[in-house]
Length: 602
Image (cartoon, one colour):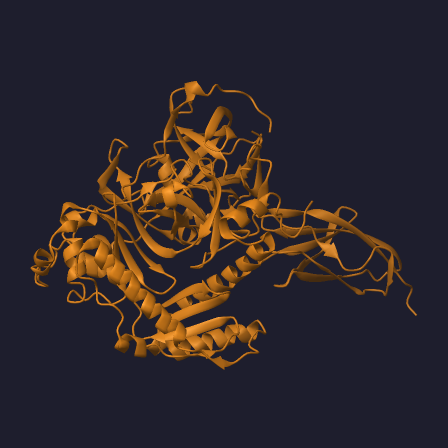
């Protein structure tokens, strides 16, 4: 469904006003109701499940770095991995090594092929329903031969199930097939090309006048009619055109690409206004803050969606106060100025439907940075949960890490239009979004591609206009920003992908670091130079603890993957007073005071 710019509101209707602005392991204040209503589970279950997403994301990255095409998802509290039969042994070897490193390889068993058969049955159902709704010949369903190609694999990690299939179907491969066969006018109909948790690649597109053509007319298209096929003709002839059996097609009621969903204490997910010159008395753009961040020099910054800037035309941002979700009340403080922005390929470039090599272009992203942050503001490493009947600053969840989202993971996003909403990550891949023409107006002749994640968006209840740029979390992990909506889907820009492609890699999301906890009770007698141990709850990778005596850092020690650290007491006897502080980049924890008594040597 075509992209639409973030909605505008007349600032004259919102008079400007001046406004001012316990560290447990995980802050769940106000989280329970949203989690239980949206996901049907307790806060503890939700946060525990988010750890599985972290493991799945790390495994997916390791397989990619090893050159193994895979589909990694979460099913029934386990990680499911699909690879081609040719890569099965290599994948098992890699996973076994990771399991050994994590000391989690105690269970070795044989995987049943029943899950694969169940997936094949589900594929048949999906394709059959697709064919029925569109009155066209479906892509060939998975057959017995396809089922036999699924190999049982060793469970080399008790939490990971690996299955081999005859051939992996990749998003890039499907794009190449579409490029080689579709008429240019059909490119404007594409909404997304994504892969789901079963490894099935789905092509989603808007309907056209040809969608309801008769079967006879569709069959009339021949393989020789390359570069001139409609999507319906390509679908009917998919196998002859080289499309894999597990590629399915879905149509929506719209006409093509997706629509962008778009006081001193500032939190992720809050609303902000944009103008070209800092004049907010006229028409303004509205979006949502993604993640408060640091630049490489330690200055404040904000990560949000690139399309919010209208290809850089919107240059100045201000805090947009709200009396409730989707109810702006006033413009308060200046926020900052738009620095880097990218919507689509580098330089805000898109592709034309008439470009014969559109699928060869690099996949873009949808990301922007707000720099020159108002020094009067306090940017927190926390996401607003938009509590009902309260200020959006009143209930938040802390951000503790940055990474990818796994298929099947449960994500929550925050934005000024729909507030705090949770849903399941259903697909990952490329979505196609309307770009802007030379006058800054949306157009289907300039298609921007964005790599990211999707989730179901019934009635635009999960993501809507104005939510653009808002934060997307899995547990307490930052995974993306709100980007677009279309075809019943919410679409989120992948944060790690945007960092890989752009200068956003020079910025780091602000993280909440728990205060260190010493294991030794204050006043305990210890030996000279004894090892004193402690821990930092949910410490992100790279966290260190500083030991401070009389205002000076005397030791800096690493925090291991389990959150543990140790430091040495002094050699001299007497009372040893110390202060502990955890640091990670520019992120700093609160301090913990402690003391022990060093005994005289025997």
